[in-house]
Image (cartoon, rainbow, N blue to C red):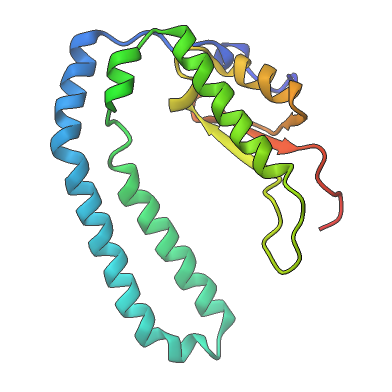
Length: 176
């Protein structure tokens, strides 16, 4: 790991109290469907506005990029309203190191399979960058993600260990 990283961010997150997780899970059961419905409504509004704006965006790439950026930003913020939600597996496996190891192994293996896939003509190129979110490695720490990823050919990118570990596929072609 690089020297710009703070070692404390690479350790496992503290185990949350069971009662707190149970409360968050109960709130998630109610709140998450509301967020999904809100996200769908916002998406539909952007879709309708986009149909009318299509006439203008046909002449202006700047407006089109701005519109897509605004849509992406808004949908990310609406999705972020559910960031405190707790899923059933998180409730059941809080503090289970073996569970989080298996989760990290599966996530890194999935990204490795995608990145190492051969390039197919007229298809999108395989991804060369990925981010493993904190939710995946919360109980084991970012150091384990880095260890597994480095063993499979990934390189670390500048990362905030409290949000996720960013990786870059080192076998990717150097030209854009």
